Structure formats: C-alpha cells, structure tokens
Image (tube, rainbow, N blue to C red):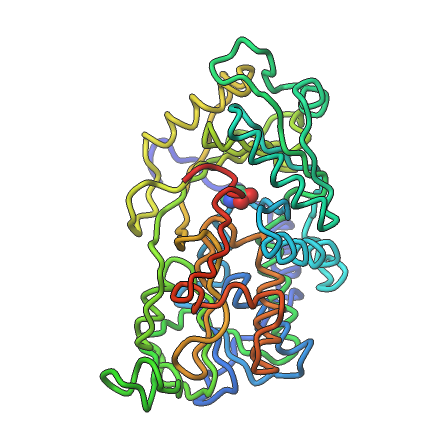
Length: 431
Ligand code: PYC
C-alpha cells in the first residue's frame, strides 16, 4: 500500500449486505446467443434503435428482432446529449413530428414502468437581435397554428421566470425577448435507454452489445458485391458472425454515413462533434431551460443541482470526442454574459457527442434505394428529443412497408427532388 493511500473502509456487515442484495438483483435484460437469422436487424443500441425494436414488438408483434451495437447500449448520442425535449420547431412537419415525441415522453414513465424523471419546466429561447426576434415570432405563429403552447415574451416576463438572467438593457447582448415553450423540459436520458431496452427484451427482442457491424450483405445491386441501387439487403456481417435478415435498419449516429456506405448508399451527412459540460452541484435556482442561439449556449439545472451546458457543433467535420479548452473558454464567456452571478461556479466535466448534420437540419428516415435497408439517421442536434416518435414511426414503416404520414417529409429522395424541410431556424444554437 503506497504511503498516501488509506485502505478502503468497508464494514463486514456492509459487504455481506451488498453481496446479498446484488445476488437478488436480476439482470435487467438477457444476454442471448447471437442467432444466424432474424426478421429485422437494428444497427445502433441507442434510444432510436431500442425504440424501433420496442415498437416493432409492442405495436406490431414483430419480435424476432436483433439490436446490435458495437459498444454498450446508450454509449453514443443517447448518453451524451443534454437531455432537452421540446416541440417548438419551425416547419409544420417538424412541429407535428416532435410534438408526437413529446406526447410519448409524457406517458413514458407509465408505458415503460420506469421513472424517466420528465421535468416539464418550460423552455426559453432568448433573442438578442431583431432578426432572432423575427424568427421567434415566426416559430410562435407556426407553433400556435398546430396547437403548441409557444409564444414570444418580453424581458420583464423573462426575468420573472428566470431571475438569475441579466435582462438589463446595458449588457453587450441585451435580451430583447424570448420564445417561451412551457411544455419543454428535460428527461433523464439513461432511464430512457434502460426503459426501452428492458421493455424490448421482455418482448423477446435480442440485444447484442459489443457486436460491431463490419459490412452490410446485399444482392442484386449495380455496385460491387451486389450493393447499391436496385439491390436488396440480405443481412449484416458482424465481428461475431453473419446474421441473415430481410430488413436492416441503420439507427446509428456518428457512423450513419459509414454504415450506409456499406450497403452502397450515399447519405448527405457530415459529422461534427458537439461539446457539453457540467458544473458542480448548487442549490436549485434555475427553473427553466435557457437557450441563446446568438450566444451559442443552452443551459439547464439537473435534479442534483448541476448546470448542464451545451454549445453549437464544432466547426470542422470530424469524429473526435475530446473536450477542448476553446470550448470551455467560449462557453464560460457566454454563460457569464447571461448570468454574471455564476462567475464562481466550477466546471466538473466536459464531453462531446457526434452529430450527423444534413443540409436542411432535418433527419433522413425510411427506405433507401436498397430494398430492405432503411435509415433513421441525420439527427444533427435533435436526436434525443426525437427518439420515441422515430422508433414508433420506423416500426410502423417496417411493419406496413409504407411511409407513415408523420415521417414522409423526411425521405432521402427529398435531396434529389428538392422538397427540403428547413429546420435550421429551430436549432437551439446557431451552427
Ligand atoms: O435542439 O433543443 C435542442 C438541443 C439542445 C441541445 C442540443 N440540441
């Protein structure tokens, strides 16, 4: 034992109790054998993949399903986001879609029998310029037309809702107003992963962690090895062996375009890291989620009292998930513009996730030119909030072999026929 290390202190009774307790804890999901064939293989064990598998089983009785993930469940964007949910988007298509997700999040604790700690605390997007205020008004009108609780409020009301914000007119970036969305809030993201995983497993869905897809198996396509347009998928090659399946769904983030290219499908996606950080815990003082697009920051306070911050995506496309000092410095500067009272708070951790950005900031969902190969990708910075509705709608798409109305606008072919769904104006922060 080194000079400075003191022995760990465990009481005998404590150890015995832990042993007893752990023995009686059943595993939350099985570790099944990898079968050589399934009806559906879902690539990606995050919220999107798990929700797709869960709704295939619960809504359509399709249970011969495998979810494969190269790491552990929730190890990608599902465990790296800032847990914000909302439906105050810019386009009617986006509003309807994300609002359905909010509905599913609202009943999730009961539906999945797990406390996902939904805190419907309200969401405020601050405007510091006339043009930002114009976009907020536009969003509010689109939202109201679709029955979404969303309106533009003035600085005095903002101050009442979040007293720690500096709403005085003398700041460098005075707050002119905000889009206020009371149904928005935060949710415990890990609980969502665990809830879907446990529920899918209970229906007989096989969850395979540490199972990396090395190739997509195809036949009949115009490209090498039968891949590409006109072909059909026959399965996946993994580090644990081949799996045959007539339907393969790409529910990955970060590696969406890499996986799609294994089937000979090109996606209009570039991948950028998005950094986030968390402070030491302090007494609760921040009642709403605060977003400032102009200052490139969003912040909420967790139930433990920590402040969770995020920023815009890093400017250069890459796969690096390291935190940078530039991010920390910029973040601190911007946060202090908004809440000068936080100057003594210490950051505890920072991390990054990967965001697959599409040209119109909307996802790519549904079929591809390869028969049986579907995608649920391109989530940019919106993936967490879209998880439940994506799973529900992708499951319906697979079961009925047709695109449900709610996701029809997000088809891949929109990039060739020009029917884009521009959601850049609804991003939490500028990119
Ligand atoms: O779109 O609300 C949002 C968001 C928050 C963090 C990343 N995206």
